[in-house]
Image 1: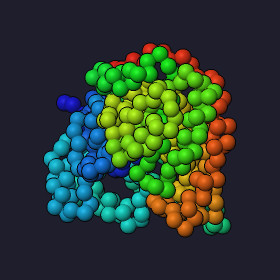
Image 2: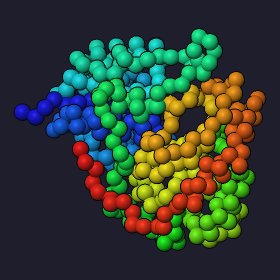
Image 3: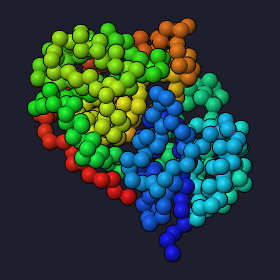
Image 4: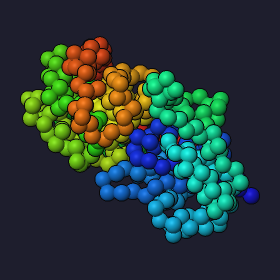
Length: 360
């Protein structure tokens, strides 16, 4: 008889999903031969869902969608869980309030019938600041998730996604004008205005890159809504060796294209997490709207630029009162100081990483 099915609860968007990949793969190893079911939120227009990413990993048998705003959908989900041969749920939720944790505890244990829920009781609810008013330094989300699955688990090396040959072919077609050059991936956009470093500063930094390394190429990544950020760079840089892929490639094609890049420069976005998941070193520009360290990208080969202020930890999506002062304090000189040694050390363009089916 095959082992019982195993269920995993992970909601969120692109970045939330990518930082969970090491934990998800470890669960797959711990339950070799079992069918894994993902419980996650459904896709919304303009938002990359967990299933948009994880359907390409071959880790999961199928997906079940969770919608806490629709009681009838929750009832359907509970019935489907009870019909499966599984009694274990891994609770890998991002930050939740105490009320949300209590609701999830009741739902998954009593409505869905899971006898063992790993990670829910250990889920810590912390205020952004300590008793002295200081902003907390939280563990990196990828480390927290892996520890909740297996305290002795070691972080595996990248890549964490394995695009299929069709995605690799699409990536090669998109990057054909840059063939034979080291490519820098750019992520100047964000769906959250408070996370966007200033366009004119990106232009200045990229001009310095061209002056320092004339043979370099650029590839801009992002969503369709962020394509204008790439078009601005195209018109301002005056180099033919730039490709604007924003809005033209899906997630797994973007992963394949990023695997051809030597470096990522950009904001704290899903694209940054995707680059890190493919093993690309990042020079990442962070707002201080969230706690330190918690959303740093996978891996240790990155340069993180961030400035803290009394208002840090605000969680604002738009910063109008302070006018994005934490980002304003990160200058062109700051970014160039982190970037220049990496530009000097850029390797020549070589063959892309092997594109293989994802292992269990």
